[in-house]
Image (cartoon, rainbow, N blue to C red; front, top):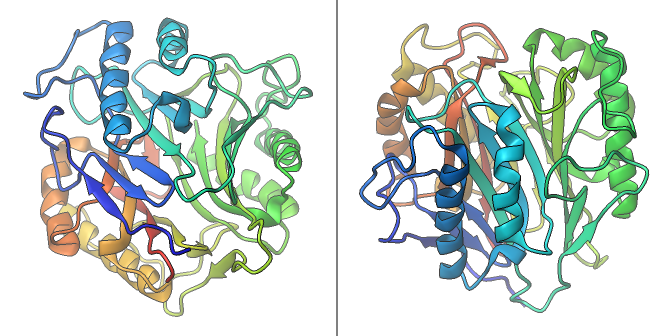
Length: 398
């Protein structure tokens, strides 16, 4: 059976998108949602200064997106919380419990550099899964030998051929960070925790399609890359890496989340790595794109030419054009285009420049509108970068 076509969802009950995106995109059994925030339908900020009430309003917006796709909170498989102050996590956990009930998704919670609109205390980025095509129900996995989740989530959620791994870091079984000040040893512990999750899902590092690495200090990237090479071996996922302001557990210098893919049916195409001729050499242990059945995951792209030289100087328009040209080239190599993008995530040095970026987005996306999340990184991977953009594409039967 061929999976359903990509379907954009736009709700009049939610605020008008502030840039070129839609509320959610349904891709077969998966729903990719735009970052939800505490605003009413007229774009007014709800409950300034109150993170608990802002979380309630945000979850109500998520509920509306889910309902439009014939889903509910029990179908959420990944719940990423971007916060102004990450240590406010305990204040929103009761809200998470109330909306999720007995269901526990995979999750990451980090303190970002800044959110898109002043006054926002959080933004929530979600993925949901419901086997409309008759596949297996989602399966939540709690790994007993890992630390107890500090909020309402589980370690891994398996959805058919995919597994969503919660963000994990250099944390021991007691829930405390280890090897403070030693990024390489911390990275080894992170990889060991990921290995436990993967094995619980019947997978390995060779099955990981995508990682996102959150760093308190982006200068620790080379040491973390040593651990990545050791555990991933010849396998290379797509990757996005950037600096955040604060992680949820004191002493952690990084956190990594992942999506893995392993087809249950041996007749289905296996995970395929794509390295595009003419693209600059990867900065660390990753590849340009990974094809997983009907999905294409694309690594975060910066404004660099084929020789890894920064393009555009301090000009946001020129940098944005270069980034989109890089995305275009990689997606084409994977048999897809901007019209196939289900979800895009934008990491900016300064969110006040998003209006300049949006003019470029409109040019490249045209009539198509993806689900989108945009926020300010504390620091991007290399000096001079004003933005980094990643995409997830979907084309059934491609």
